[in-house]
Length: 221
Image 1 (cartoon, rainbow, N blue to C red):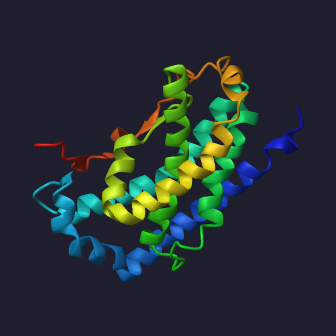
Image 2 (cartoon, rainbow, N blue to C red):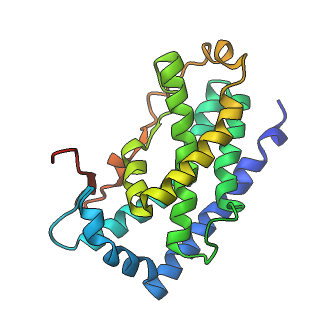
């Protein structure tokens, strides 16, 4: 198996990490996204449970963790898919997620700020969630050890329902062309769909880092 088959994904990782670094630096200089969150705080509190003290700091910490988790998630899926010999299947979805960072859709802002990057991170994470959701429906188990369901719902509310729904529809329509091919489910039944025991799954629960949690407000909560 030629190493050149895997050359694009490793090369994309530095570009993604540099985009994240630049966006965080941009936010540190401008405070633009922090001001945006302050303006939407009342609406956000209707959907999310935030700490009473410094809720904006908690939201900013969550957003930075969410964005920074993208390259780690892609690297984990790449490693697991290679170990269990289904990289050829996973590669198109990994490329989709990368492209949302390196060549974002035209309707996304391109100011290099944290808000723009959050849109791209949301698209990337939703690709992986869509793949796992399909596998759970068809095979009753996830494919990869990445569970960002709660985190993606939190970001959905931060982006606003109308815009986030439009982004999700883009992901679903694009992924469907790969997931709904007639032969694919017979093929993936042979995929183990689990991670090596020494790999910790990525999820929003790993975002804490000593900070108060940002959680979904359940119906009636």
